[in-house]
Length: 46
Image 1 (tube, helix red, strand yellow):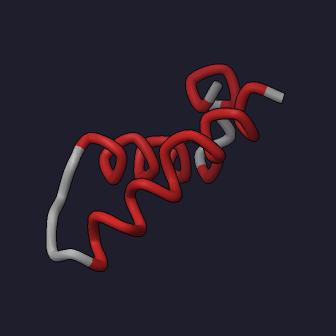
Image 2 (tube, rainbow, N blue to C red; image 1 turned 90 degrees about the horizontal axis):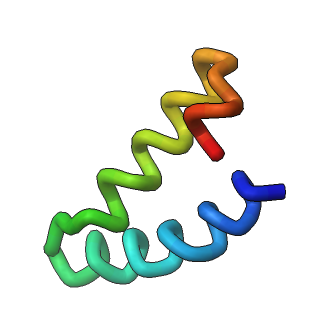
Image 3 (cartoon, one colour; image 1 turned 90 degrees about the vertical axis):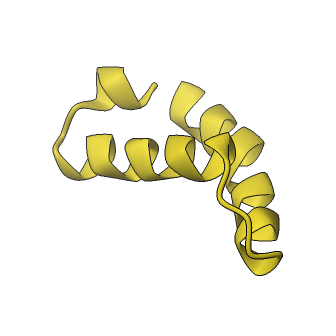
């Protein structure tokens, strides 16, 4: 459940930032979330 909440919090802002040509903490958090899930580290993703 916390992964979904994190995704809902950071991903929209990250997408808007990338569309504007800006890299921010939302993008970094989104990348970390995806990386942790891919590696099976669901606790870290949460």
